[in-house]
Length: 238
Image (cartoon, rainbow, N blue to C red):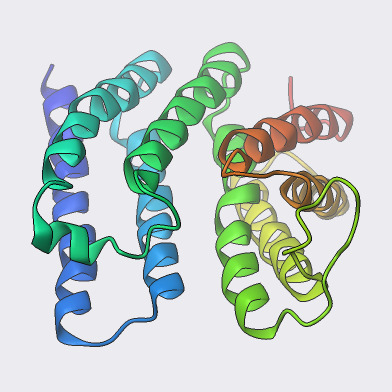
């Protein structure tokens, strides 16, 4: 019980500091809308790291994430009615994006943690699958919006995504998975590099073909489906 209380307290403190700093900065300096959106996106991703290491058991971590979204979702609904809060979140591309993203992210986290940590016994695989999408997606949006001149016009895409944005996602995804698998250990460096490259490539392709925000679920799940077999192939999963 003490561990649960300490873990929950740490997560609450994280959100107070991180989200409070972001919102405070929004009042003090002019932050471009897309940049602010991705700052909130990265804060949400950072919280998943907190959920992973704040609790010693996978089911507590997954359950805590579900409880968190159930509690916060109605709070956001109420806050949206206040003008000041609405002005802060005018970065939303469509109404309700913030609370819906929170719902998708934490539901996805609970599922990935249940499979990777609960079934396979490896929390680092959960983080690698999620962060193969997370930070790469942020990079794709920021770089693509500012420098994306070469649009990708595949049938499965919406015509808004660019070569520059997708390459940015690929690079950041490779780095993210590489760092996590290296820290995790249990694999040769060559195995880590190959797994990171393939996982990032698949995540990039999944993001390209995702629409209406469903990449939040599709990309991490796709990354997990690719990541786990390759980790096993290179002897990193017993």
